[in-house]
Structures are given as structure tokens and as C-alpha cells.
Length: 167
Image 1 (cartoon, rainbow, N blue to C red):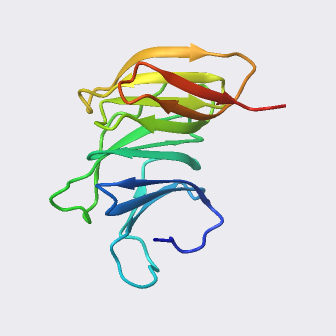
Image 2: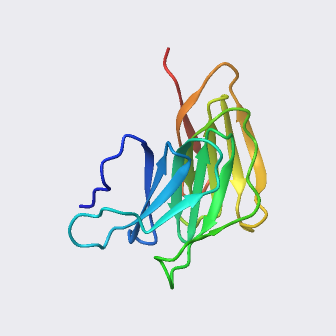
């Protein structure tokens, strides 16, 4: 079992590259990458990634792709290099925008070809990531007046589930 150092600012976690890396989405606008194969207590991250301008709420990983979403209302994509898993991933240049509120949840299909993002604005967006450098918005579900708190996507990307807040 791996535990990242205590932090009150960790909002979401995801394993990447077959469990070699743990990504944490954090309140200080960063995503930290941790070496899960380290022995003993891990005190410092391998990498601190900056690309968001506000709190990072969500992180998801599949294959060589890492997706992050935050309170800047954007989703960012990062490409990991499996040959050099502990090196800094490449931030893909184009932030993905389809929400008018904070991103609260992300889900990637196993192959990293489809991403589901869910927002505080009651919007869920389905993205085609076949060309990771040019994501395409495939579909949007709007549920005005609701805030999504969680989202999941089936492996074949044909079914999506969303959890609205309970008031």
C-alpha cells in the first residue's frame, strides 16, 4: 500500500502507468506525481505539474494519458512517457473548455480514447481523445440547477452515469 504524505489539499487521486505513478489533484493549483515503487516513506513528489489557474479538483489516468480538471473550468491533458515514467509529462497545449463551472469529476476509458468530465454547472461532457492534441467534444448533457459530484463511463464509452448533489 502507498500513502502520499498528509495533505489537507488533496482532492482526487489516480494511478497511472500500471500503478507506477500516483497522481494527486491538489488545492494549491498543482498536480503532483508520486513514485509508488519507492521503499519507505515518500516525502517529496517526483513532479509538480502546473497548468491550472485555480484549485485542481479531479484527476484521471489511462494508458499514457493523465487528465486533470479544476476550478478554472478547464480540463488539461498530460502525456506520460512509459519509457521514462519518472520524467515530467508533456502538457498538451489546448485546455478543454465545455463547462461554465468548476470541473468536479473525470473518467477516462481504459484506452484513454474517451473522457467524461462532469461540472458544478450541471454539465457532463463526453470527449473523443483519439487525437489527444485535438480533443473533440462528442456530446453534452445539461441538467440545469444540479451540480454533479461524480461520473463514470463504461469501458466501451456507450454508457455514462452521473451523480447529482443531494439537497
